[in-house]
Amino acid sequence: QVQLVESGGGLVQAGGSLRLSCAASGIIFSFTAMGWYRQDPGKVRELVAGISSGGSTYYADSVKGRFTISRDNGKNTVYLQMNSLKPEDTTIYYCAAGMSVLAGSPDYWGQGTQVTVSS
Image (tube, rainbow, N blue to C red):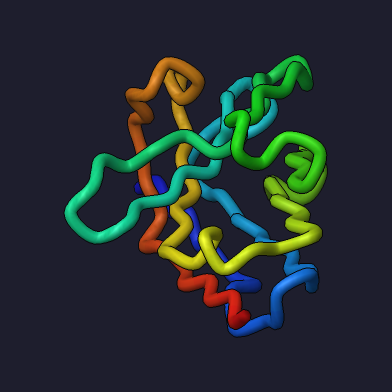
């Protein structure tokens, strides 16, 4: 059974930082692409950042230069370091895994973690 467990969300002031973590189990983590998506109410879930099994990364234009995705294959964990946070970054963030993560079609999802940025 695949599980993706996110942590690290919370409330932060604009300009602050948060680090999200996603611990994975039930998959061969080192061979699996991972990503972070976010979804505003009534909108399509969008890919924020992704990392391939080989370490190549992708970022949405809205977060380039502010967010950094990384992975620790020894801990089966993917991270999203979020700096210079803006109120518009407020939403639920979801960890995702699977071959098509970077193409917008993950195989697996976490339960989501709320990020709130106050102005």
